[in-house]
Picture (cartoon, rainbow, N blue to C red):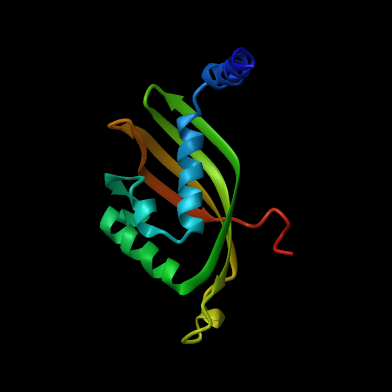
Length: 151
């Protein structure tokens, strides 16, 4: 019986050992999405490079402060990432994707009437491995029409 258990464990372990590691760009996007949906600005900030530059000269500290304000204003946040295109070169990549945002604004101070319940943006990200962790170095974004035409 013991031999059977050992053989079973080995058989289960072999496929796990032979799996290719997760794509680091996909893993980064998954982590960014999860951090945003958890409304965790610090977790998301951990994936921004120290020298991060955003659209219109936005610095890392400014981006983190802005994220904290947005996350505090929403009770819930959901993202759908689509159209991901990544051009890799060694330990760097340029990533383009479309992110559809939906959220429930807090019902305090009239925020539910001021904040949009949904939006769609095209993001262009320059990402790189820094010390073994993939981070966003630069980001730009622009609003786009939803795929369903806003219906």
